[in-house]
Structures are given as C-alpha cells and as structure tokens.
Length: 300
Image (cartoon, rainbow, N blue to C red; front, side, top):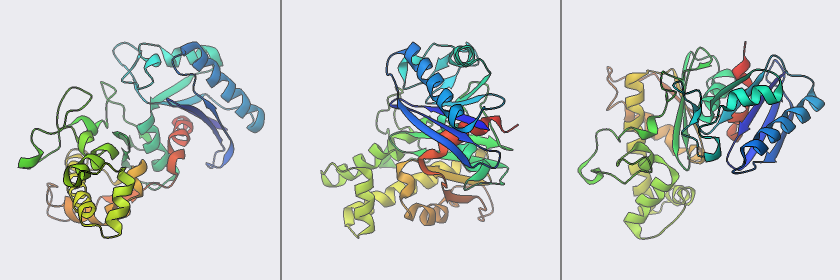
C-alpha cells in the first residue's frame, strides 16, 4: 500500500493506492493556515486515518506541496503556503510520522501521476503542465520527477513569452518581479485580462472559453491569441526537453480546442523538419493527479 498526501493552501488530501494504482482510501481535511505545528499534526491525522482504513503503508509517505525543497538549505522555498517557507518539512514530518518522507512539488506530482497510470502511461519523458490560477510544470523521466540542481525543473511559467509580438512587449507585470512571464499570459487571469482589453468586460477564463465555443467574436479572438501563445511557449519546452508527451492539467485543460489547435501551430517554432511527433493530451486523473502522484513517489 502506498500513501500520498497533497498539502495545499486550503486542504490536505490523502490517498492510499494498492500496487495496481487502485484507490483503497481517500480523505480530506482543512489546512490549518498559518500554523506549522498544526499542519504537521493534520498530516499525521490523515495518514493514521488512511492506514486505519486501508492498512499500513510501505515503505514511506509521499508528499506534494506548492513549493520546493531547497537543495542549498534543505528548507522549503517558493511556497504559496507561506508558513512552510524556511522549514525542514520533510525531516519534521519524518519525525512526526516515524518513517521516511519523499517530498516533491505538486506540479511534479501531477506529472508523475499522469506518467505512471494516466494520459502518458508508458512514455519515457513527460512534461506535465498546470494551467490555472498560475502556470506550473513538472518533468518526469523514466517515471521519476526531475527536480534539478536548484529544485526548479519544469518552472517554465517564469520564463519570458517567446517570440513576442510588438503588442506583447514588455508584457504584464508578474508577482515574481519581472514582466512578460509566460504565466502572465497563459494563466486563467491572463486569458481573462486579454479578453478585458478587447471588450472592457471582466469575465472568468472558463466563461471566455465557453463564449468562444459558442461563436462570440471577441472571445474567439482572445482564445486564438491564447492558443498562439501556448503553442509558442510549449515549442520552447519541446526544443529544450523534447518530451514524448505533454499533458495538461488545471482548469484551462478542459478547453477542448487546445488539443486540436496548439499542435497545429507549434511546428512553426519547433526546431525540427516540420513533423512534430510530441503527443499533446488532457489529463486522465483530474484534480486527483497531485495526490496520486505523491503516492507514486514511492514506485520502488
């Protein structure tokens, strides 16, 4: 039995998987925001409840977080759950749980899940993309997440939008302190902002996508610009990593037009002979990808 925990800003979700990936138990608890000790206690509570229902986990616990473990300090960095920053979370949880803990960024966990028994099962190199409130990414090679020397592998959202057009310079400001980041264009708020610039109307990204599907001219224009930008941004990933499969997650992954239109365009920027064989797929596990991937951190 494998247990995975997805430690988010609002919820702590746990899952127990058998060796075939079947779900044996699952539960959620509210995250005690701002309270580190209570967060550790809640994770322990979730693990105890899962083992009570599904049996003991071996050999350890997998944990996904919205941040990363710094190789330099051994402490959490880049977490929007800010009370985790600067803490030795994996070591503290190992003490609390009495067993080893493997920790990964939640986007990496998503990619691991889809590479293991999801939309990219069997593929050697998988790039998992999160398109939602922000833009994240995770890279998996041979079933294992590639973390990188700085624990930022896959963070394509904070590269600049490639091949920018005149009306895209210098680009919107990003919370990271720079301008024109991919995240400012390809996140849900990025699509909403682009539609607002065309119409003056503030609408959620999913509403814009629905209007585009129904033939609304302004929404179609905004979505076409989004598709063009996503194709350019993913072309740079293909040029550097050349994954077998790109899998989309997050709220915008439900826009079906992306899977037809983006591959039709990315060949204009991919450094190849015009035939791009990278597969582009929607996720199989939905918002369960992160917690399932955390459990699969113990594939061995």
